[in-house]
Image 1 (cartoon, rainbow, N blue to C red):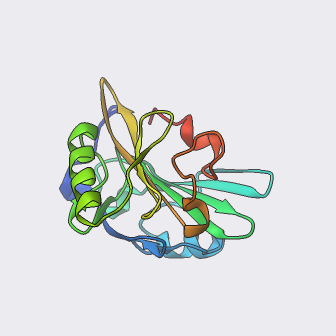
Image 2 (image 1 turned 90 degrees about the horizontal axis):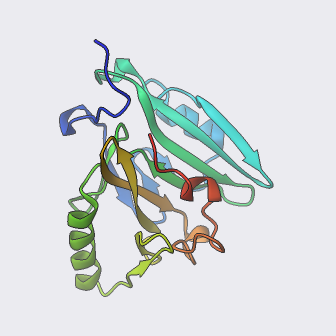
Length: 189
């Protein structure tokens, strides 16, 4: 079955992961090495389809495998590494990434404006700070979470970026924060 690059997984086709701030995203724990990340996602996500380095930092993109029950494959997550931290950031693809939840709030593939409202309510209820990136992405440095948007054809859906404590300070800052510039430029599939 030929599918368009903009096709979005339905909720039942997505892997189901939870987010524990500064600790883990699904099976991935902040601080892991690239080899450990590959081991944890083996059989569900393909090993790094593309990867690179810049200075002391690296990144690797993992794709959804058809064997995981999805009707098609495509990018699922981008792992960002820091030489001194290990796994320091995880960006979840809005179209094909796992559904990541934070205390029942679905963070992936959502309408950004609706998710922003739920996120703001959650932060207020937990006395947490709300920040915005220079691109107007809502963020909580106290959770290490930035809610970015990603194109899905003519629509946009939520693409969360979840970071380790070492990257949380200024995680909303596209010019001086630790999240690599490569991520801030990601808008397409």
